Amino acid sequence: MDILLTHGYYLYEDPHELAVMRPYPPLGILYLSAHLKARGFDAQVWDSTFRSGEAFREFLARERPPVVGIYTNMMTRRNVLKMIRACKENGALVVLGGPEPANYAEEYLTRGADVVVIGEGELTLEELLPHLARFRAAKLGPIQGIAYRDDEDGKVVQTAPRPYIADLDAQPFPDRAAISIPDYIKVWRENHGQGAVSLITARGCAYKCTWCSHAVYGYTHRRRSPQNVVAEVEQILETYQPDLLWYADDVFTVHHRWLDSYADELKRRGIRIPFETISREDRLNEQVVRMLAEMGCYRIWVGAESGSQRILDAMKRRTDAKRVTEVVHLLQRYGIDAGMFIMLGYDGEELSDLQDTVDILKEASPNVFLTTVAYPIKNTPYYHQVADKVIARKAWEEGSDRDLTVAGRHSPRFYSYATRWMVNEVAWHKQLRSGERDLPRMAKSFVNAKIGRVGMMLSQREVEG
Image (tube, rainbow, N blue to C red):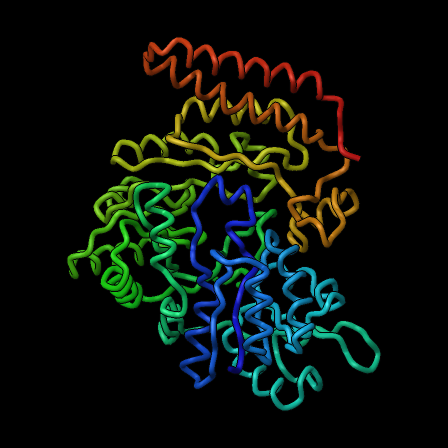
């Protein structure tokens, strides 16, 4: 074995994930596995999703891989730190990749990682693995796209960036055979009635929303050809027979000509399968929505973020708050469920902005919406904007960027009440407008909305820091 590829997501050790039960395979390391195998490397994948930390330690002790590559994101930090220690106890070199280590290279290198890959991993690992086999973690300077600790002065060195892969069609499909995709489909079917498989049609996002991390793909947007993606869809359908697809692109409908060609190619090959994906208000119009419906789309998540145009402009979102209502109604008219992502607590947000968001949600009446409280992800424009006010609620080893808050902002209790108000105010308004006669249900929504509003007023003076 040249390298063991793994990640730090343990479904059965995460209460929040157990409540949701929507696990997706780790596409990033499956792409790495496929690329390395195509180049003649002996790469193996240890999928942590349905396993345990103890099982990982037992595997390391038994197999003794020389190099372990761990995909890391902010939510897996604690698990990954434990995995690094286990790797070092078994003599393995540790290479970290993904969005998190690029932002915290020094912290991870201090805690045992040997190399941090910054950006895409395929070409970097292809060059790095023979070097590690010959020199271990020494003489790393010439390798592009990495960070490491210099042996002589102990300083963290970041090498020149590696150019992004230009021709994504030349890359093999993700190595799904390296893990048990049927296990994922089974969990989905048991908990949601239908099994899903995920894929991506492009890499990166060219938009510059201030709070969004671009640590892996930068601000590039590189598309695969419609024919290449449809060939992967055919392989997925033939091999796994899923009920649904999840297009995990940042903005699936960003390129309308591409989408039109993709829809034609699906139709030409007689493929129509339900799917879910993410888009933006400004990349949806009636022609696109009609096309999505014909392709089988059953839900679109619209990154609305706020009903306040002032806050959207501060985020550099480049979307129109008022047009979101039109887009949601358009999706619903074509039989597509509309979901909305809402972000509370962005720097400078006031009560009037929250009211604008509630008003938009009531007017749009999406099928579902999810809320989050803004947090400054390291090295994003938002983080730099509030850097002198960032407060960590937990020690770095115990938390994540989700535990970062901003001094002077309302307290977590305020946003808990704000969410309660928002969810129930919108629900009550929807029940009232629909003519629903479930009075106990309506009363519950009404009372909870009032409790949330009063709680906001009582906790309004509580601020972070």
